[in-house]
Length: 337
Image 1 (cartoon, rainbow, N blue to C red):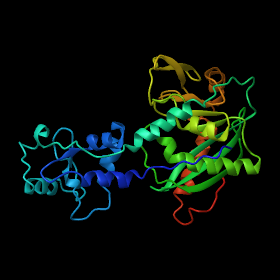
Image 2: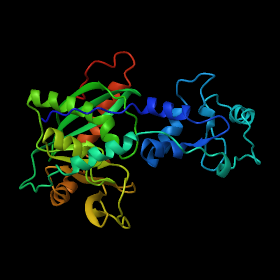
Image 3: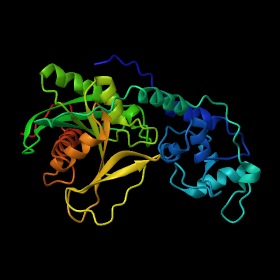
């Protein structure tokens, strides 16, 4: 397994530093702050964090409003508190809105951390190998992550027999996970705990020929999802599995059980939609590392065993959640057997 030194930015501290730059008598928007961090896709996280951050009477978070000009939610739970603070600073409301043409502050001084992380994804993309596998493995494993609290993760590994779907072996690990969830940046939240998990699995001699990862592979805005990261860093063949389509286009009309259809992203075939149960939405598979799309197509129908998710991912998800939700002793390892 490759040694990986990954110094993650402290997004919470950097966000709080940004809002301190908003001068009295001005406002900014959640989206503007996300762009100052490096990517507008972080807007949802910015809004969520500011509703729950460490707060004091001197905190200027009331100066962050919605892109519509409306005040939006406030940490006190009362939007009127937010409006009153803004009016006390000389900001006028027209009906329930602020004119952003006049009051918007955008001149943040920042070295956007998310731009640097995208650069890491671009570098990793060059190391991905999409290689054909000559035959299907007898065993396959799934890995999934749940959270004991917002900053502590538990990752579970479940090894199954590919033909029967029966569980063979399982294990889990726990690890700090301070980086927040931001769509398309999942690897920076979960890769450290995944790496610790795979190291433990290797030491036990239970490493599967192919690992299914709860997260996307090359079917990703920058073709570098968490399955790619994990595959490259551990040098293990990986396939990404998601319930939702992160990017790309596919025709889902009339899909039948065990049928798969190719997902096109940026004019290239990058993944599959797979119908695993009747009358439910399909799941999405994409190569991570060490396998190609043709292998995924051959493997895909064999992953359908009765649950919506492949058995290995279904049981890894269940195990990680059971550990995370154990309020009496969440640190102990469990088994599903």
